[in-house]
Image (tube, rainbow, N blue to C red; front, side, top):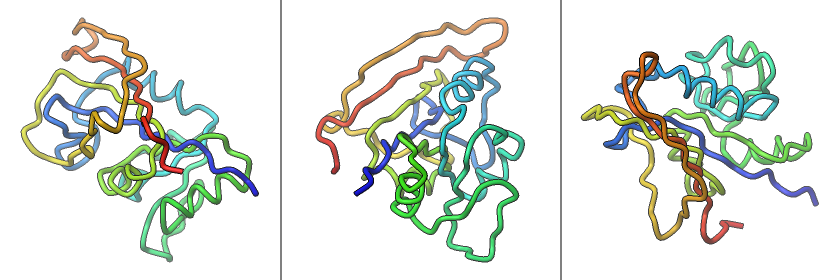
Length: 171
């Protein structure tokens, strides 16, 4: 029996819990973009169709799995899957050790119940509304690392990278 890969959600989240105001990433944070690229390089990704379409050009050394209910959708790179479980099974069949969920809101909500790890960029900004990231229940998650960065000439907002591990694994 092949073991399933670790399921990691990776996102930039505002101080009030949103990942977007509706389309795209609402910040220009070069440090976060580099962090995302470095973390996901060579990895398997799962993402919703709209997020996939917004990220065209980012997949040169990644294997995207597009989570969609539209079985006629054919991505130019990667494959489609109908569920998070199907994505985990497919990635496992190819020997992937980790599957990164890159959003958007629907993909994060679908994956959160079975996620093993969260890699979040906490952005010192409030959006007020938009696409929420699922609530991170402190009774279920333990922060294992944190790296802070102040605002600077290239970053209008301060931010910090944090990794969280699920306290009681889902499997």
